[in-house]
Length: 175
Image (cartoon, rainbow, N blue to C red; front, side, top):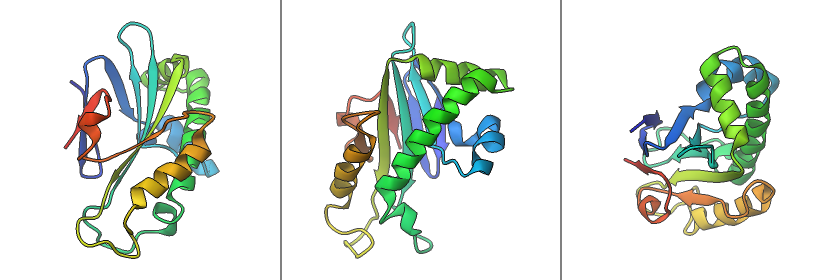
C-alpha cells in the first residue's frame, strides 16, 4: 500500500489508489508556483480499473504550534484551500498535456480522466484549550465556508482528522 507523508501525518492509501505529493512535482514547481498558483498536498486517484475518483487533499496539522499561524492558514483557510483546489485542477490539466516527467504526465492524465472529484481538507486540530486561534466549532465553520467555495468541484467536501477519518469511507488511513 502506498504511503505519503505530509507534515507529521502519514497517509496510507488502498492498493487501488495512486497517490502523489502534487506540491512536490517538478511541473508545478516550474509552471505553477512561480506564477502565484497554489497547490494541494496530495492528488490521489482511485483506479480499480479506469479512474473513478480524484481526491484533492490538503493537510493542515495544528497539533503542535511552534509559531503564530499565518492568516491564510486560519482566518482565510477555506479561501486558501479553495484557491489551491482550483489552481491544482488547472495545473493537472496543463501537466496532462505538457509535463516533461512521464510519471507526472500519466498521473495528471488519470486525475483529469476521473469522472468524480472530491475535496478533502485534513485538519488536525490544536491539542489544548480552545483559543482565539482555534475557537470551538472551528472545523465546522471551515467546512460550511468550503462547501460554498468549492461546490462546482465537490458539493460535499470533507474536513477530516485522526478521529473521524475511519468513519468517512475514504480509501486511506492516517496516523
